Image 1 (spheres, one colour):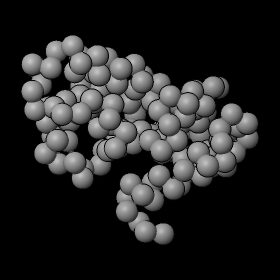
Image 2: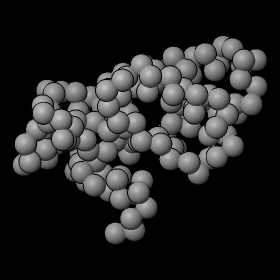
Image 3: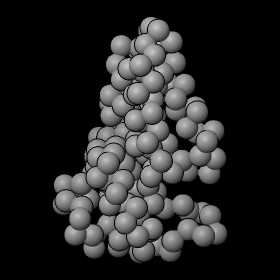
Image 4: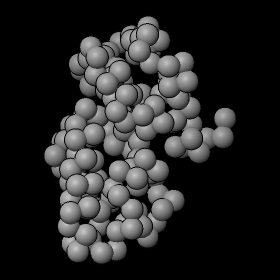
Length: 142
């Protein structure tokens, strides 16, 4: 993925007034590196707090807007990364990513295994990440 470009684009949405004008808009970040998101959000919040004159239209912290409107795709295959992403971003903000059809994506059947086997992720968060968040995001009404 193109992590830097994606993060800059997300920053424009979160800090450029787009989400203030369109609060119903939902964004999904794929191929962005979920592990980088907490630091990026913290940095945007810090700038919002210390330099409010640069974004006078911005009424809410970028992380608050993120927690209402943004979902992040996360692949559960790297040891510890998925649990870490759930801990710092919250189970409500993550959707399962498989990296398919890339040549290095995991095989079917391996996708849900690491999540199901994890003892560090609550049953509620497993349910959300394995499908409930995607159903809500896509408004499938299942």
